[in-house]
Amino acid sequence: MNIFIPTPLHPYFEGKDAVEVDAGTSGEALELLTQAHSGLRKHLFTDEGKLRGFVHLYFNDEDVRYLPQKEQTSVTSDDTLSIIPSTPEVARSSDCAFCIALSLLMKIYASMICRNLF
Image (cartoon, rainbow, N blue to C red):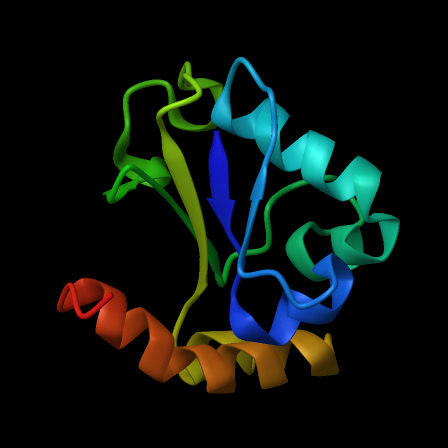
């Protein structure tokens, strides 16, 4: 599956805006991504291992939170997963400065995706 990486996280991926992973579910895809790039985990997940509240995942343009199987949704090599931070107002509740900056930078990116400008 192809995972689209938000611009502020490109340094973790040598500037790439997308990476391929071989996973069975969307949750497994994220797990493989964070295993390969360990510094990334703290920006996407809480200490308890839950996806941070202001990090949204879109599986083939569908919000994973509203899918029946959520992060256990089965994936194929033709599927895509987009990591999208929410608006800055939500991110301010986090103590992760990088995550707040990420959210600020991604507000335009998320808006562009919603308008299908990519």
